[in-house]
Length: 421
Image (tube, rainbow, N blue to C red; front, side, top):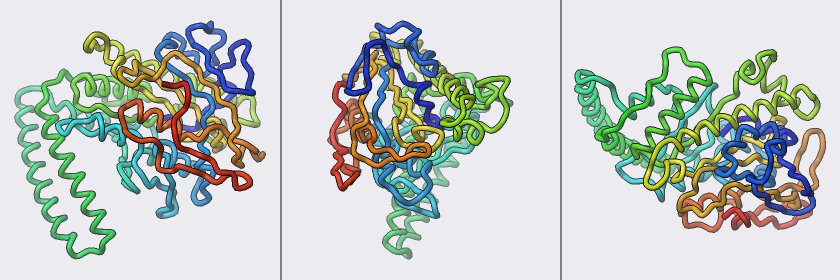
């Protein structure tokens, strides 16, 4: 997940001969590089391994009225459920799709999932359940140590001692939480029980992972840069997946340092460019380059997974990669949420190498930059449901199944998107 959405005109593909009046699908293999947008051009070498969805929107986020628009969008993005306001901030009320998938494809002797963050302080996007935020790990060196342990015999012996000490602490803490629970109200008892369960489960999974023999990736450097940190994340995920330490991970990318986008640019990326993307040609250019930088990162991750042999193919053949943003655009819009997925889709029956366009026909009053939208694109719950079903999750809809739109029109958020699978 990246931030600030995308400048739509710098993201979208418009192959020769298509219109915006009806739905259409084009194969990416048939397009020359000149017909790839500047923002998505780094994906051209992988065009047979990715699909692009142009035409889903955060319609349900537009339905919400309480909280900051950014917080509402982030709570809706991966959960497809309603939000509630807690301490002045909108938070999700149901599990995010990474956790729904982890419930099905994970094993009890693995980590349920990994959450990682790159750059500035992260915000909530992944949830185990109502209000249970899964905060990402920002200390990559600490995560590397936790997953792969130390090197050298002496360090390994100390590591085993530390594991035993941690196990004792967790056991004592779980017991103490059980004792405290009886003195609390029903709601607090439920929170304590959920925390205790996660604590015990995490300790058991970590103990199992510690026994896995795995070749670790290079440890993160002492003074890493944004690009170095992302390379470390790619190495950690490549090793964690190939060693079967986990099968699900999310990476939250903070804003790219502006000098990496354009060495000649100065200023604050969010306030000087993302927020002004509808009124400034310079902002549009910067945000298009910003999208291209993240597209290059997505390609970097997919290429790394494709370099690991697995079965009759590669690790990428067995993996579904999804790239979305925390919101549709930097001006806090919900319309035309940028979506790219890729990989082999092994067992998922998702089609790769396609561009899917859906027109905006949902009768929902949205908000565009300084103007009201009369219609929006397809509710993003249909995309989330499509992805979950592709990963063997047995459901037909996300928790928010309907929205009341313009003129009291019923908007059905159930089902899947046609043509993706």
